Length: 433
Ligand SMILES: *Cc1c(COP(=O)(O)O)cnc(C)c1O
Image (cartoon, rainbow, N blue to C red; front, side, top):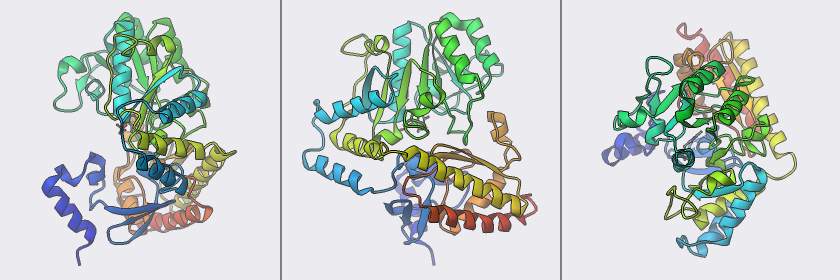
């Protein structure tokens, strides 16, 4: 019997490239058929065959209070009943801006957009317009959306021109991006010494969550802060993933570092399309119509999307929300680590707030190279064993995982018990140990 997921996947591929609207969903990294979901509630998703999963993707981060939280659904319904979009200002947008500014004081002014990609593209243009310089520094393994300037990988030497990492990105644009190793303070210092007067800004994930999970090395973010000050470049923290996911005030509050600009997305829309960029008043005042840097959006600040974000953020402001989320996530990673050890599988894991990383390696990686050296086949075998047993992990060894406030102690215990069986099963595969 073919499953409904198989049927839908075959049908989707007739009209949608690879059957998906964003590449990782196609399961190319792990193989097999993507699950087509029909419903989500709390920590659970149900697929087209009616199978229930405990979800550790959470729409790649936004679902921090769980799926279909009644307060969020009600806020969306109420907003929708009053009209979907006006292309004109509304009071709710002000409330969201005030909430973001209160929770992240580095945002003196903030503008709403509709995706993380839009936020980072706008922040780069703003950094260039503000400084009158053109070069951008990014770090290998960090993902900042699919803007041309950011789909760039390192050239052959650290200070050579960046190379497009996607067809269709002109090399003239890639040449303006310098790609350096994450967590390498000496490399960024050398880049500033060589080209400091041409560098408009440095964009970084303050906790990297798009090459699995990589924590910043002690002193790395501090070095970026100091160098951007010294060379008057704009320091951009891309907190699209970490914003209100790893700490009530984002990664910048967790590490006590004040960036010049911050980009947000994911959690601030609570599952609806919302992004934002904001920061120092003197920089943000360069945005149109106050200043010469153009940026606009028909659906920016959309009332239904903003309502979902506000309701979600409000739920995270209960006392100890982040303590509990962090504890739940830590319990999960500790349990998985112990289960792997019992099964004799080389594995480790770490948590950061409501994010986690799983590594088929002896030690937690702190560089892109170390992440790439993890056992991808081991991950894929584990992924499928978990999926078959009703646990939905990110379908790639190079993505972070996400826990929500809806994950109960029982959900975590069930996940660890399932993982113990999965490790035992895949651990006996000789390719795996
Ligand atoms: C997801 C993500 C983006 C892109 O956001 P989209 O809403 O997918 O465009 C940018 N930066 C980081 C750090 C992200 O995790």
